[in-house]
Amino acid sequence: MMRTILVPLAPGLASQPALDAALAIAKRMNSHIRALYVRPDPDAAIGYFPEIAATAKIDRDAIASEDQKAAEGARARFDAWRSQHGIPETLADGRLDTCFATWTEQTCEIETAVTHFGRVSDLIVMTRRHPADTMAARCLDSALFGSGRPALLVPNAPFGDMLSHVMIAWNGSLEASHAVFAAMPLLRAAQWVSTFYSPEGEPEKQPGAELVEALSWYGIRVHEERPSKAAGSVGADLLKTAHRVEATMIVMGAYTHSRLRQAFLGGVTRRVLQEAPIPVLMCH
Image (tube, rainbow, N blue to C red; front, side, top):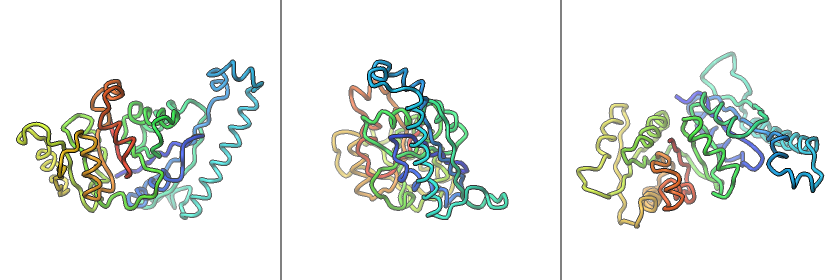
């Protein structure tokens, strides 16, 4: 079960797709959605760019006032979203067989808030943004490396039922294992589950068979998928196969190689983050 779903919100982070994705899961699992709005610390903001602040004559009160307006606007949009979908703010009579959504505000660095609340959540949901988006990158890093919990990244474009066909990108790594077992409630709720692994190396050394057997003990029937034709990289093979078999979610380990290596040489994580048109659940 996934009882608590965290949705980090902040200036510059899109809220609607993440909230919609969290709700889709919460309805299936009667989860608590915690919308966490992170307000930047005015003192820290001035400290980052003291010369610009001094030149533009921006003081702490002005920054705090703008932050307050942004927070109020975000809260109003959240309340409208909650009302539109008929989601209560609290449990009805203390019952656990329904989903509800609450609002929390924190004034601090986003890394601090996401790490703190993420560690007591079953899932962190956020909208996938352009790699150059600094706030989104900080939020994702905190979710993956600070909280130790799975992160579900959803596209800005509309998407259908995420649990129609969940495809596991499996390479036998520790990170992939973390992702699979963190996603177990979603795998058990999925209509169709498949595995993908690169055809590199000797077939008898491929790790997919062990995963298929392991998941069978949970009552999950897994179908193995392989690329119809090698595309030149694991990331390209993964995305092309996901498209061909009409996968609606990818579950994978994040950064099974160092981030520095992936930054210079590319990598599956980086490519999927940039190009996947469907939700991706990652875990490190």
